[in-house]
Length: 269
Image (cartoon, rainbow, N blue to C red; front, top):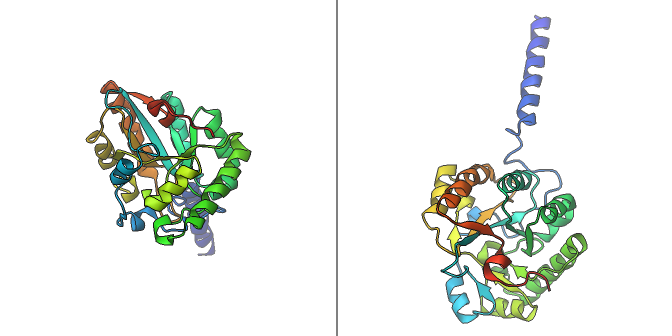
């Protein structure tokens, strides 16, 4: 009886080790050292939309951008909330395999936690933007000083890693208002929104995420995806969807570009 029990325990140990090694129990769990999203997960917060980015773009056309020229045969892939050791390396692998350069909007807290991932993003030719330090809901905070602190801290931290001060900014959840945009303008930032939302934060099946992108694709599109997530969220389906999205976009005759290439704007201050 004792021998059978020991055999069963050994079997369970091997099974658990195998699952962890393959990542099946890692996804959705809190990685050690991964900073949390201060304002809450995308899935919980994105249901609230304070002011349309389309309206902000009309009010501040020199500061807020949503897409590139309609005559362009280029589109831009963008990724938010990283670097995340669970998903960013997988996305970088796919981009490298396909010879694609993208734009990553990084959190300052996560960039400091995973500097090697930040350096890999830059070394592989991608562009980095500012996505605040802790990912707060800036509209809910109702305090320009919070924006200043979050953006400045991230700008300085990123500059130490990538040797330039990024000029590109994207707000957590895409939430901004007039006062916040005006402050970002005064801080010499271009606010990059998007025109195609993958809605990958719903954690839908890969086919649905791909459909969300491909059914809304247009010349000059800026496509929103996520390489990072909250502790209890999973971007595995984003990674899988990307393998469908890239060849389908190429088949339609589009080329991939970074945001500054698409818009012909500087990305350094």
